[in-house]
Length: 477
Ligand code: 4AD
Ligand code: MG
View 1 (spheres, rainbow, N blue to C red):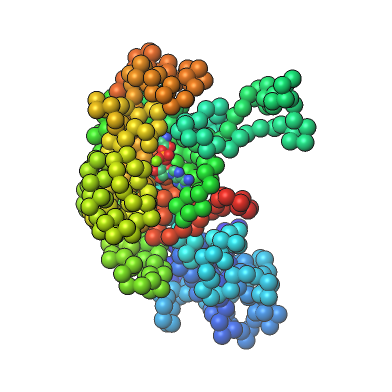
View 2 (cartoon, protein in one colour):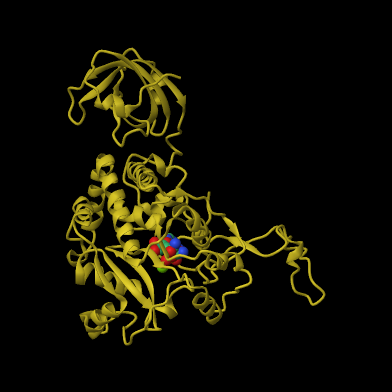
């Protein structure tokens, strides 16, 4: 099936040629103008049919959603809104679409409604743009690391460990729930299970990533991760994609530099390769913002926000400094925060993160040196005995986009922290081997891919930047 993609035709000035386009009908107006989209561009091509010489029954089948093959001459368009159009010679309906039943009518649908028909929402302008940008960002991530000699490591999806020690795992099992094998004392006999022990979907590829970093130097993972946390927010998914670089002979400063460089690189890549899509998404966001009260609207439009992020260095402050700022802040003094900041050691909620980024600094912020009690067991302990070499990157409108740390490379210190936090050392003996044999200072971080896509596209719900979102009580498609 020979066809030319619409993106290429819209860019050409080579008029008079015969071309074939295949795509889906967006609209059919005046019994004459078909707007066709084939997904290659956010823009449609217009095909003009001569209704006098076309069968009435064929014209009737040109309904929104139908798939068509159109052959004709590419001509300069006289109409407004497009530069080129096709003068149709032959027209074939490849797949009909019943206008009465097709849910995507040529009008504005709410994002909530489109989420319910996620199998069809790819065909809208918004989701065409969102998933093109998502693709570009994924590609840019690989390009960034490849240019720097990082090895792309595929860490397991099914694991027996809890990398974050937070217990938010989905069990992987083939046990028949209607006929559970039991030990004499009544407990479940997992020896009978597929792997002969309990296993779960990975929450992070970090621990395995560290093993490889201790051989290759610089590695990264980019894969799906799973969290069984019951968070029904616009920024949490039960299944999300994470990019996790891990580097030997790196300290926290190098780690922060790399993360900042990566974010700027991939945002810059999207700006140059997805200009049409981002222009469309900028307009979409402006429409959405008009519905909000003035003081809640963003000061910058989407493109200015992305460029601002590229042009300014991220603010770097310690957790302790952040707590001081928050304690003195207006919403804390006036008791407007849901969780008031009273003392050092408090975990930061998204309202606090957003205050720091959107109100106080008005730019991305990297917070470092968090209290050890609110962070994972593997982070390097500072000499103060209270804090660890952690870093979180906070973004406007998003909150935490990156979480990372320098790792505890000293065996004794790590073992002691694991025991304090009840992390089973026997099960992680393979992990501890890296500290036993040629341990080295190292660091890494995790970038939540959907939070990145949210930021770049200006969408406001994380369910709208992954094709088929998984959230509590929802696993459709
Ligand atoms: O801060 P987190 O939990 O860190 C880790 O998993 C480390 N092992 C990373 C590392 O150092 N290699 O998660 C990292 C990032 C967060 O900053 C956030 O962007 C994203 O992953 N994230 C989620 N995104 C969507 N839905 C969720 N439920 C998420 N949980 C974390
Ligand atoms: Mg985190």
